[in-house]
Image 1: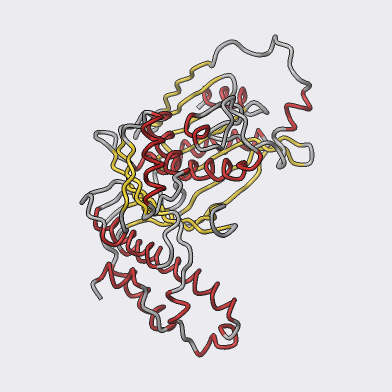
Image 2 (image 1 turned 90 degrees about the vertical axis):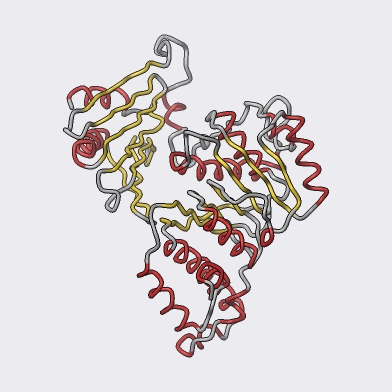
Amino acid sequence: MEELRILLQKILNKDLQQIILSNSRNPEQIQKVKIRPVLIRDELLFQETRYKGTQVFHENYTAAQMTDGICAALQEQFRQGEFTAKSLQATALVSKKGKLTLKVKNNGASKAGKSTAPEQEDLQVLSHNRTKHYILEEGKPVDFLVGLGVQTPDGRVTKARFDKFRQINRYLEFIEDVINELPTDRTIRIIDFGCGKSYLTFAMYYYLHELQHRDIQVTGLDLKTDVIKHCNELAEKLGYDRLKFERGDISTYEGTDVADMVVTLHACDLATDYALDKAVKWGARVILPVPCCQHELNRQIKCDSLKPVLKYGIIKERIAALLTDALRANLLEQQGYETQILEFIDMEHTPKNLLIRAVKKGSMRPKHSTDIRTVEEMLHVMPTLDKLLNNK
């Protein structure tokens, strides 16, 4: 581990970009850890983000504490570490016998001899109010962003579309987190239900195909003929030959019988349930829905114990929406998926929506059926997704 300690002493400073520890020996405890530098009250610290099931935990440490923590984590918990700094990139692999192999690649000449901005300006970007580092960077023109009016031809993000630019990058972070779940030995088949104007569909294609060089076939589906026509024209203009758009309804779509990833971002009310049912029956490895307009349970929910709360219409509506998505996540777990419910900025509809991230990990889980049924009986509800998945 001495070689690793030397590396960490070199990169645990303001020039660190990110460290990712993965390939957990015990995923039920901690699945993954991400580390980045932060400036808090003028002190340089390192924020550790730990992912455990559907939970995320944050802790801040000094460089010395983080060095000890990373070395211990690779000895006891993880088999892989990815280290990214301005000056180098490194990968640490731990064998089953505990032997650590470290590969380091320098990123070119050091900037030490060059004239730079003052140290304080370098540290400023690490503060909690710093400019965010995006997957698609400001100032670098991206063809589809220019084509959709998010960027000018020189790469400047237009003021009116900056929120959309942030949303696109946040969405790509979700894609980045699941990319290793997708096949590498064949074409990845992706269906995007309710793609609308397709900002995020184009972003997904660009990230997976142009940046990650994955072999993909993406189909965007929507009901609006004019939108489909425009999107196909733009895809053709950009040379995105593995991206196509079709007019169709989610519940009746029969264009494929298999899919590796299914995305549904603006499918209102029951349309989300039909999309999830399709995704499960296609055997999708990854499902990413952002539901909206969850009205079904609002019409059904009855619970004497909650009468004092449910008598307020707006409270009942919000509780019903949250219950709808929680039950959807549990129904996906019943089908063998690991699920998380995350916040997603959605500029098209409500200011903040929830994204359900579901990754296929195993077979049916009967225990979940009992738990779901208990909640349904207590609230006197029967979600459409339950009926579709379980033939009720």
